[in-house]
Amino acid sequence: RTIREWLILVAAVIAGVAGWQQIADERNARKAAEREGERAKHRAQAEGIAVWQGESGGGGMNVILVNHSQQPVYQAVISRVAVEGSGAHTGRQLPDTRILQEQQAILVIPPGRTHLHFGPGCGGMGRVPGFEVAFKGQAGHYWLRYANGSLREIGQWPVGYYGLSRPVLWR
Image 1 (spheres, rainbow, N blue to C red):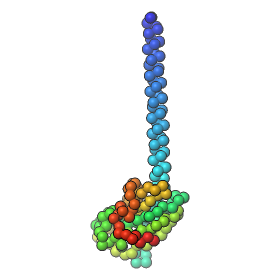
Image 2 (cartoon, rainbow, N blue to C red; image 1 turned 180 degrees about the horizontal axis):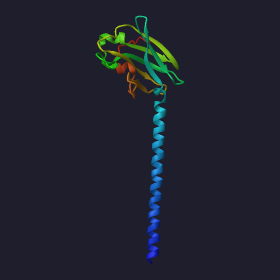
Image 3 (cartoon, rainbow, N blue to C red; image 1 turned 180 degrees about the vertical axis):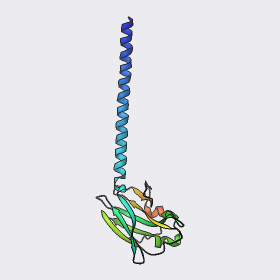
Image 4 (cartoon, helix red, strand yellow; image 1 turned 135 degrees about the horizontal axis):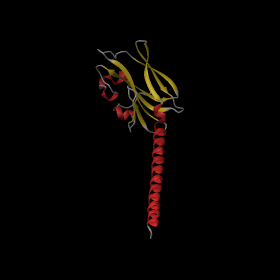
């Protein structure tokens, strides 16, 4: 074989390896995009659930719970917590003596806005109240939206997550 033939052979091998690498890279990118799409679809309904304090009045706090999805969510537990200051910063940190005053259970949250009312008693020096909501989405996954807005999948029924006694007083 001549040098020219060897160079052509080496160039063909390099081109083949580069082609296989490009195919592998495109396949990996496509699979990553599919995984991200599945993740976004998995979280889509949960992303549209939020809760915040409305205007105070009536001897307590008015709360707005919104479901931006087209489907209801189920078995929600809403907890009044402290965003700043003293007190429980998550619903799981609430003392047993405060659960009935600081948590509400809602069987179904339809699309749109739902209004709730929490009684007085969230005061404390420097305490800034906030709300978190744990719920079951349409696909059967359990989620928690913290008072700071972050969202995570919790993997268990909200009643069990908070260790609430049964029977649950659903509203």
